[in-house]
Image (cartoon, rainbow, N blue to C red; front, side, top):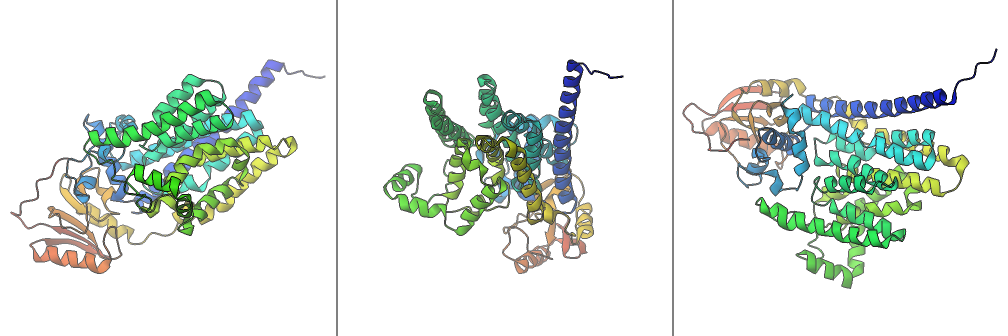
Length: 482
């Protein structure tokens, strides 16, 4: 006897299996990212710079105030009432505030970061399926999930970049699907992630120009560049920040106009900056290897050009052009979309799945060489650090060594223990290894000696972690609330 399955039933089953697979990939990625961040947190490998800064800012939002970070403000001599909107234009962080009503601590940020980075998978999958089919879309999504730029972002504290991949992917996918209004909404939200996200919008305009959609592309280029100017020169200064605080192009000129003139009149100088130091070339090459350079077959790669160029033309802020930290996560989803489009443009239908498989294999092969490979390295002095944090009472103002601050930020007012004494009533010092921002262990030990000579009392001392308390009667500095 032959049983015939109705066509509608078969389609529903197929769609059900597809949705299940996509859900599994997305959920697994979110769990991986969140777990990686939490493992680092509990191993005392995340820092006051930058996790505590974001924690204090989002906590301030949750209390219906400006995003104030006392750690950032005091360390950089901006004052204790420093709003992070003076530093970066990232008002989208306010959307995280309600989660602090559920759990008030940095763990919340790390889990949310994991979810947000994984949220780029569904739009990337939709785009890839439209180009390559369902099976290949699963492979591309998996390659993104294991990609090294995402891994590096996950293990380096929390940053506003968490919002960028999903919003960028939705902008590309919705525009590709012919849903212009939804694409515009995603692009508008992207402009709230960071002040330089207008460069991504400008890059999208370049892509449209390349495919001869001039009437839309040229205005987008202008709008993206205008957004960068407005956020850096109007919005950030409106909150008390400086438009030139992150000016990194002094080699070309002291300001934007002079640097632009120099680059146009001396193009070889600008080209030299793109490859100096050689680490810049290595970073771009590794981004290409990540997608087997298939992105070069697609004009979508132009979306990543302006933000990448802005980093590689910099003559200062070396963190911008390396493979560590979170900066490459701003463009990773663009390169995977471009790779999927590039595979489709090869017109080798039989090889589409095999090329997508290669993307996943490359991602897996690179795992040990980047952040996840360092994740399970045994931590040192974890118990001592935990004991030092436990020795500090709730509600106090404390100067904390960089890696101890995150363990204290949910129940104390944390300052970064730095090269300038702040004379807080409590101090958690690290004399066992060099810690940011000191020049070396000798300077850290000298600081402890200075505090002891000025009336501080030793409360805890184990494996290099030292907890000091100001002598009774000592007046702490008048600092604002976190």
